[in-house]
Image (cartoon, rainbow, N blue to C red; front, side):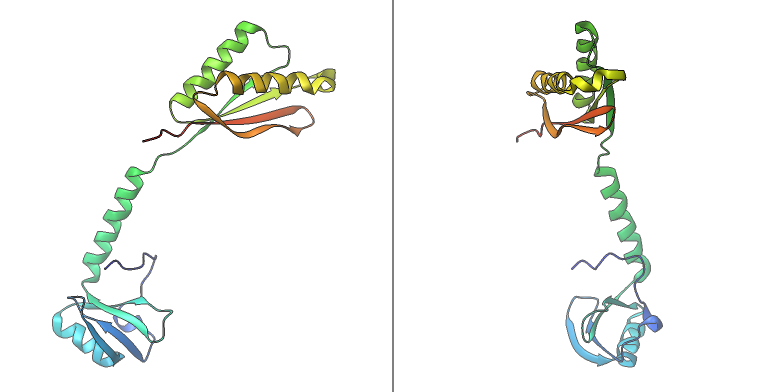
Length: 177
């Protein structure tokens, strides 16, 4: 039986309930006992009384070795951290007048980012009066999405983020098992 993972559990004399539902070190329920009896039971076994469900009425307590429990929880937390992956968002900036070769270089950068499992933020920046032709920028962002559709999903469609930029976010496609 797993215990609730929290920063701090009430142990032994920190428990405030008068009566507790006691579970011994073998996992057997011993019923509802006064706190003093539960503490004596834990002390006889040489273990700690740990409040695992303080919100219930009466609160649920287990007899266990608290030091060992904390060690096991830290190991579980460490394993969970090792297995998690961090996703970065990489950004590529373009302009509506970007040349074909430069466009291909930028698309290859986005392809590389997506291949590593990162998300890619493609920003179209407008200077001067280029903003009056925002449809050209949107067309270029749609072209990028089309060129990368086999490896990327569009997470955020192209939209004007500020007066001078349009943003689209691409995420790598999920691998189907």
